[in-house]
Length: 262
Image (cartoon, rainbow, N blue to C red; front, side, top):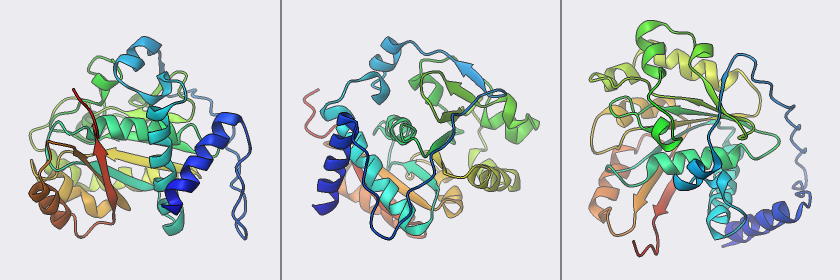
């Protein structure tokens, strides 16, 4: 309860424009300089598209945005406590909201002035992150892994989402689990996690119970979030997914569509 209270106070301070207090004994983090995307391709996403896709940056302050700010605060605390910066977002099954959660968490984290965020669509079997941004299919991670396309040609920056960069999935790959466990993918993880100070890398992974992809890739991330849907995800599936991820630091579960009547 104390963490939730702190998160609510922090969100309220942000809305009111008040500076956040720095805990005793801890130095305030350096402010990230304004990011100039000279090589990364900028893309324009209309506000009505972001709102239709339920992306947090398109909504004013309220219960919806506060929910993600609370999640952001809880995730940040755990990452800082352990000096982690690579996070996976997955779910037991399909359609439970993991991609939307990963995108909104990334967008919310990127609102922090001392952070940059890289969101990677690692669901190589069924890449859909671009759809949530209202974008057409485009080259991405698959092209980096198979065709040696430089990252600088694949990364995109959604304009008006400061400090957020996205690597789309690219074309679907039938051998996705093998590609996620490949040496080149490991090189990508190491390169992206250490290139910029203050960066958080988020991987949107496939569902744990649907394919071997998440299990194959999980040893290379610092921690994972498990997204479940109220009224859809069974307790047995949650238990199975957590058991499979036992070798990973699972931060917790995110209950999606809680209280929804639709």
